[in-house]
Amino acid sequence: MIGTALMIGLPIGLLLAIFFFMKSSKEMPKNWTQFVCEVRMQICGFQALLDDFIMRPRNKVELYKQPGKIALITGGNRGIGLRIVRKLVECDIEVILGVRNPIDSRKAVEAYLEHAKIPPGSCKLHYEQLDIGNMKSVREFAAKIRTKFDKIHLLINNAGVMSVPFKLTGEGFESHMAINYYGHFLLTHLLLPLLRAAGTVECKARVVNVSSCVHKIGEIDYNDINKVKNYYPADAYNQSKLAQVLFAKYLNLIFAEEGMPILSNSLHPGVVNTDLFEHSSTNYIPWVRALLFKNPEEGSRTVVYAAIAPKLETRGGCYLSNCREASSHRYWNNSVQCEKLFNFTCDTLRIDDYFYKRN
View 1: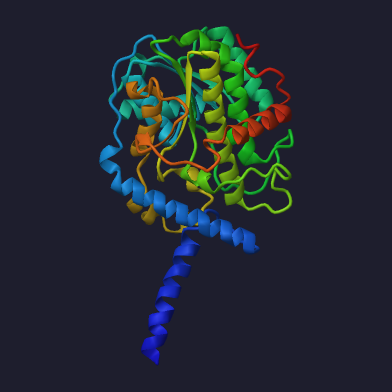
View 2: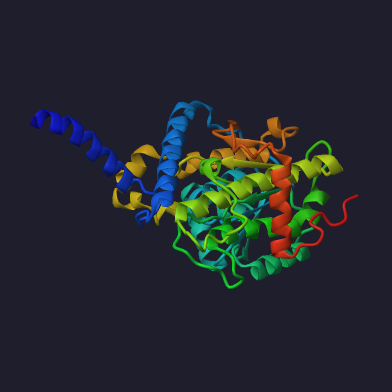
């Protein structure tokens, strides 16, 4: 009898422990819908961890010199962003960092590059203030960039948050959507003239959206986009990551239709051990993250691959993982759904002509 109870109790106890310590946020689901969302989130995460392990030999990017190119990255001062900047610098690419605190960011980046034996004075780095979740800040940042630069070859929409407590921005946007999606949607719009000026038929400019594997279980809730009625952090995060993927896909469709010399792709960098997980239950057992998750350098590889790989020169509209094309959400190849989200976002942000009178 005791043996039977142990046989039943131990697996159940293990599953409950895994569920609790691997939760996407520190708060417990409050209803069945939230519980299902959390379970799906964890299943998706475990599948991604397995894929990262199996595809580790494929997760490689070849760096090569590209003097004269300019890249702009949001959130390049920590996590995988720091490693992305390092790889771009090693390619002789000039880098603009859009960051909340330019002074502190400069110190962090320069210290990291010095530790990597790359003298900060040997590379061209620019630090500009940007709060990507604040649309006024995005507009001011883009205006400043347009006065200082006439071309941007690579736009890497990297900054993001995950599973943060519910909060509406001053403009009334839920924080995941504002930071992960709306801000980058607006920034891409405002920098399109610089991207078009940089791209050529032989070497197109590129837009790279850093998304997540959990976009596959996301849904766009047009009736409650801010999740006010039933907020659960993972649900809001998944929605914002799906929005990034559908946005990248639709952008590339229009670029191709209009003959613009720009490519747009999205990607999953891997399950990476960074402070993105600061609001998750994995903080209770950080050694598990160190053991199972990718390190930030490994997480930066697919991002840089999307930005510079020659193999993608004719392969826009892709969703990538571990430096190769991967399966995506059921709406990924649905142009109607992609356009619906695009038009909804333009209305939300009051953008009349996203592509500046196409020609």
